[in-house]
Each structure stands twice: as structure tokens, then as C-alpha cells.
Length: 81
Image 1 (tube, rainbow, N blue to C red):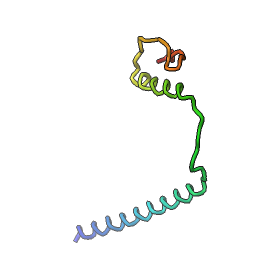
Image 2: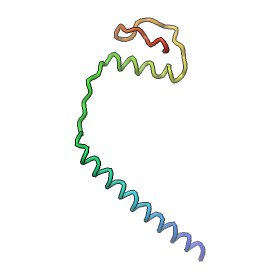
Image 3: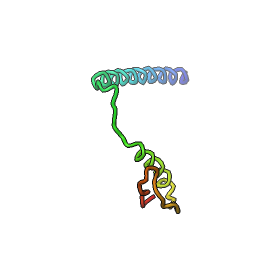
Image 4: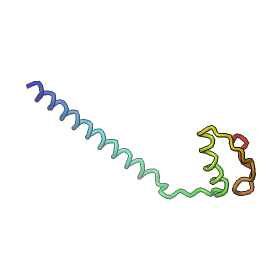
């Protein structure tokens, strides 16, 4: 008997969670419909973007590079690199 009651409680909680998730989905859909900016473009300098992408792993690993030469676009590498 106790197992049946626990099962019923879990089924009710699952139903409540499903309703809550559906409600959140509706809210997100409404907010996205109001945002209106489906396509956003940003001008970037590709060389700077690539250099930053290459610096990120060195920062994360804390590695000090021995090569202090020119960057991809002729820029000096990040001194912290």
C-alpha cells in the first residue's frame, strides 16, 4: 500500500513539473517573439579574433610561451601570453 501511495505522489509531482516546464517554454517563446533581432551582425577584425582564440588556451593552462615573435597579423603577441 505504501508503495502505491509513493508512486501516486511521484506521478503527481512529475505532472506538476511538466506543467512548469511547459509554462517556462511558453514564456521563453513569447520573449523571443518580442526580441525581434533574429539576425545580428557584428563587424570584427578576423586577425584579432584568431589571435585572441590562440591566446585563450595559453592563459587557461598558465603556459608561458618562449616564442615572442609576431602575431598572426603582424601584431605583437600578448605579453601575458
